[in-house]
Image (cartoon, rainbow, N blue to C red; front, side, top):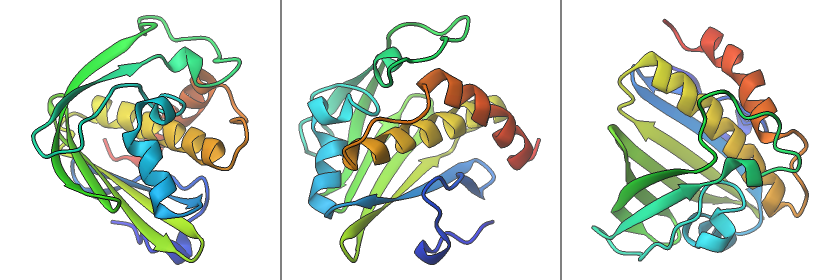
Length: 182
């Protein structure tokens, strides 16, 4: 397993396996924890980097994520064959401690936990995607989270992402194929 201390964190740090089926990825983001929390929980801000969907901030509250990845960057890059223009996922909040922690269900996997920690004037976001049972799914969520978090970092910094969404996914997939054991 890899050291994930903030002192070793690079702005474009790769996710690492912190268990055989668990991905952990971090980003050091500009601004206070409350601002990053808003980007996690408010649909209008979250849709700028991940997916839209109104969220009642209570344990057990169901919600739906609606992805429109072609809208995340301009241009979006060529969408891979078989990728839908829109994707939806029913989720539920499993743990919430505003503005420090949000845990949600995530399809057939064990769920995703976002933890926020102040580091000076910045915020360390740690994302853990639990129990991802298949390597192909692990490769997809790794390159996906990496790309979405890079877009989040750009948006919070008030700038446009530098690489088209689908181009970055395509570039990162082979990197994660080498980083994640078969």
